[in-house]
Image 1 (cartoon, rainbow, N blue to C red):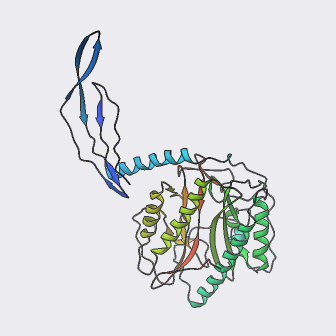
Image 2: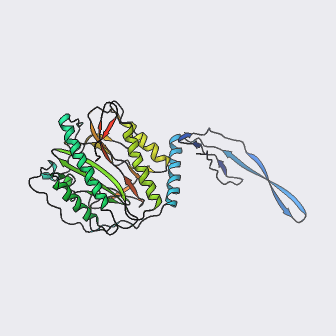
Image 3: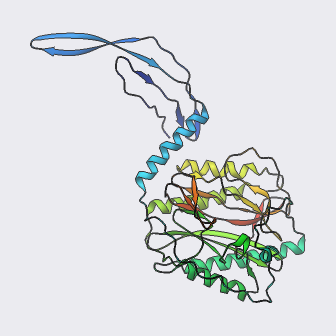
Length: 369
């Protein structure tokens, strides 16, 4: 990217501020200059006489730190991106139908009976050979269910109908839909439309042409959870939305690419942030990836943004990576249902997620079919 310099307007008493430039992805802070007054002349014409009136202006430059420059660039990109991408009508709550039933013979996760949101377990989940085989089965089922759910995304289809189809497919496979009853969550899948960052509750709202929707599927099969999500297009979607979704999926892929035994967890956030910023998008910090296995949510917490958290990956470990990117702000608001979380400015958000297994030479994506 070409260097840029931003100049303020000036008069005899104003100052000219030179901001630091940036090249490519690297910031180059400016030097600090304090200059002496500079004399200028302006030409005025009165009749046949030319007269020159001296003017003075002051040149100065403020030293801008790398962090300040990054914040400025981020704000600039937010404004540029907002002007290029259209917005869908604001998301409105529909009617939430009663909770679907699960046959008694299907084993349930421990949290279902209590209805209380469990604490995040502090133990890493490192299944043995038998556990890994069960994880593969659970994750493969989650991937198949997600792919099927994606085929249902069409104008006029309700998210409640998607929830019902997902629920039926999961229980037909002898598994339990992990979100159902988790901390009181009333549905079997999360459906997050347009500006909904995550945890959208399926309801009676019909999908519209131009919507994007993230469907987040988790199944509990034979004592193990498989967790995955993807953002789908409904009908004719704005090109700006499509680009956001494409870059979000690429961020997930780049985060997975750094994973292997002995790698630091913070590399995931660094790589995702670098790629998102290259396209002017922002990474949501509030929601993180997590360990997964017999327990739905555990350590390690996977931060998708730049961070200095300690910790190294261990062979046999299973966890999710699930970045959320936004076109505008990453600030959010939560509806009274205590789950549905939207961007504060109404800008769209996209998310992708995989469950992965750490190996000696890299990682294996388990949520594939």
